[in-house]
Image 1 (cartoon, rainbow, N blue to C red):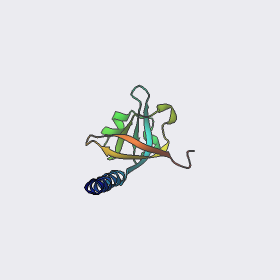
Image 2 (image 1 turned 90 degrees about the horizontal axis):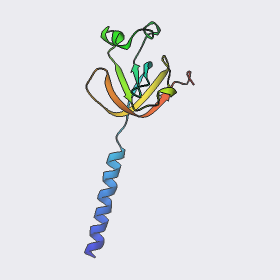
Image 3 (image 1 turned 180 degrees about the vertical axis):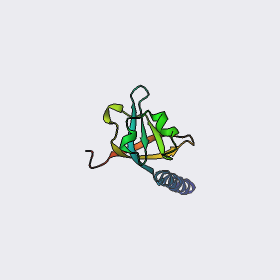
Image 4 (image 1 turned 180 degrees about the horizontal axis):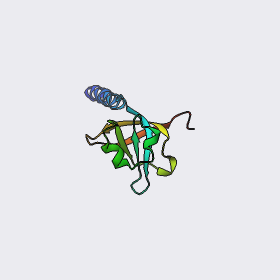
Length: 114
């Protein structure tokens, strides 16, 4: 009887732990792909990026102080993305650098781009 009760509490604990781990909502970042870095398997995404800044070097764009939200999305297949493409990046955590570094759980292209 004691073993059965102990097993039940263990199962309840494991279930609740799993539920807590799955309940984290993703952060969502919307922007345009500025740079496709094939060598490092990453893309630079900048929020509210203007068309005229697509042709500029990413360092120049980031240092211009025109944009406050930018992320490097690591561990992607660069061939799937092109500069100027509007996307949404879903991720759990990012570092505090600028631009931030993230690993995406999901990337969704804008419906207009597909």
